[in-house]
Length: 273
Image (cartoon, rainbow, N blue to C red; front, side):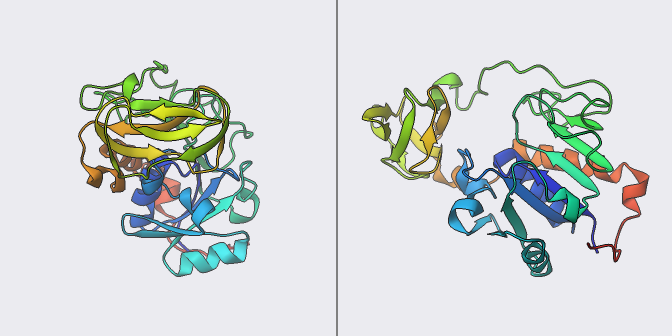
């Protein structure tokens, strides 16, 4: 049996990790919320929770509910995704590696260690305290670096710049309520065009661009919550490709796993519970 990895959070960054590890031949199980808050849904395995079946680039994912369904999914060469916000699947899946890719910026809520190797992504994690190693998620010279001691750079609260836009490109809910989408991910929009409505309040495109991300239609959102992303580069193709940042973090996770000698020796075993 291949090396087993449980990834908490199937958003765009977590999906970069899933892609890299799945391509390396590992069995990767994704756990998510009952209603994922993912924005970049076209490159997120979390979308399987809503759709039942989805794909990120060439990798197919299925929503599953049991250990047996997950095993069948693995044997087909696909990625299982299940509703399990507390990662209780770790008790039957017995992962060699647990990756926390939820980007909560609060560190882990599980007793440490929850697996032989626990990897935290982004600010909030402290290596040796709630994980074994932390991966830097901030763009720049340190993106993808591994910290086996301490933590990453602190959260700046400022979205990364794309095409010269940073905070302007991120769409946030003006009020709490149920979101109704007016466009689809991949659509080209003009400045001032309605992208969604929330309790009668319109969310407008801040500039001409392409809708790179938008939370699921009908989702209840809270005031100030990130609900979408407009890309000024106006290239719909980017909406369907895992980003360079996500792949860099995925590569870092693979490096972390292969740097542990006891995990390198894990190829196949018969310890499925």
